[in-house]
Length: 328
Image (cartoon, rainbow, N blue to C red; front, side, top):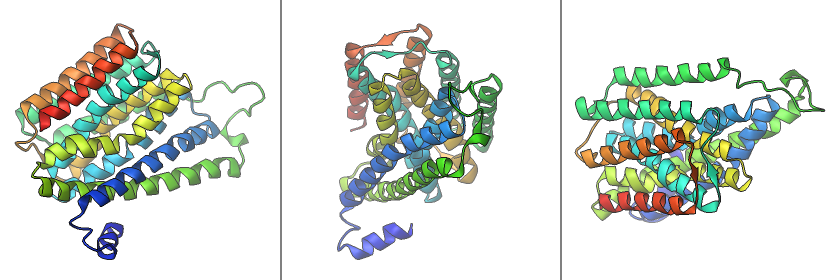
């Protein structure tokens, strides 16, 4: 992007100091993610969206914006391993690191109305992704259409089952038509500003990550599965921490599950239709197995209606760092 080119030109030796771009990108992603969550929640409230829709569609969709930008840009630049590694790494980060941090902060209940249904869809998307990468050695356009179509169908299903337009609280207007323009414009402007920060952050992270991989001798997949994945997961971390601190584990869980569905359904789906996504040698069978087992574990815990507490949080975070060590 133009901003990255300008920064490299303006700062002496910036192209060789990839860490600078990476740090700037992570900071920008963090700032954007921090502001996009309250902005989208306020916008959803102004439009009379229920907490479930806000968590799964608005918040999860908004916080998945970095993964979409990073994956699209990486795929267009011919770095398919970065695109695939970013999605897989981000989902692992959501399942193990983000949920682990949430459990450390306090009781994280998993027994919510839409959690089982959403987790099973997430598991299904994961199985399709792993099968395609193992069998076809790529995310093919046909699989991309399946993932994208299934995601759109699921979002339409959510609106059909009545999770939209909740009954207004006492003293509120009857619907969005009662809202004045300034009430909607304020959170909309805040969301646009956060998205701009996410765009800049994603550009910095991709540029810094690719150069850093070359300098350190690490593979593109390793960078995508670790540093870039954590960087693009910052919005999810911010959203989940804020939700747990406000004792809204339903919003936190909806954000994690919804984000993973968006990552696999929307991001891999759209990216595979824009540019080829072949599986490189660095996306190992061990990585795919780790990805599948982590998804299966979280789905099983949700189906059993578990409550995550601090010891489980420690185990989750331990599993995540074990995965990072496996990449070295």
